Image 1: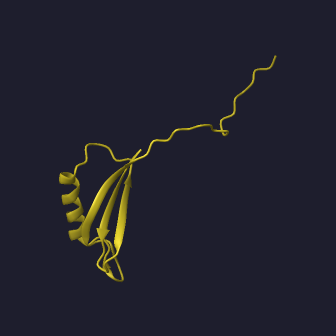
Image 2: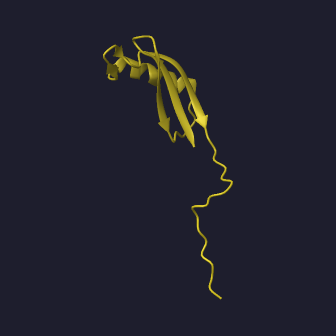
Image 3: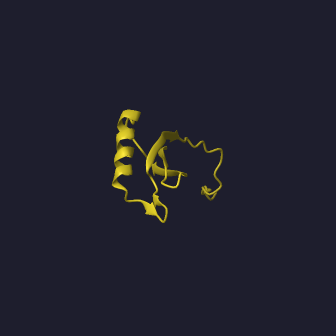
Length: 81
């Protein structure tokens, strides 16, 4: 599974993360940065200190692959003899 994690600096100077699960496609900095800038300009995510996503700081894709070693939740049915 691939996740996109966007990091912004809020109006009070703290880093805030915004994440999206199950991203697909060929995301690049040239595609993500303008979207982050537009989100910042919308100024729709706010708290008592102001805009939560005021300034784009970073973006990364997190790729997780699960490798199941065992799973006891799966029960096998034994045939009666």
